[in-house]
Image (cartoon, rainbow, N blue to C red; front, side, top):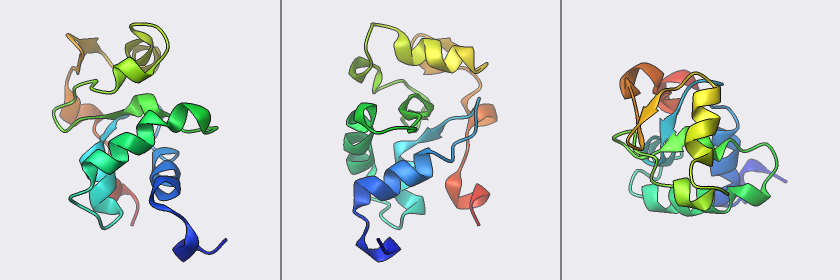
Length: 111
């Protein structure tokens, strides 16, 4: 399959797979990297379905303030938080502590 033939969700999953262990990014940062800056919500929809896609660390994608807005799509009440904390990312009140310190911007990291 040529890169131009990949659908948007597949492109989102490719970027998400590159998020390093112990780092997080936002729906909007992925959308912007893919040249669709106004499509953060579509990235969110892709992450909602990522549980069925192998190797996609959907727990590392949060909103632009570092809130775990997608946590209700994970089995169990705190699985998203637990996965992040297992990687050394502290979460309090459903928000990543020191968000900018953990933030991974694909536009800067994937040149």
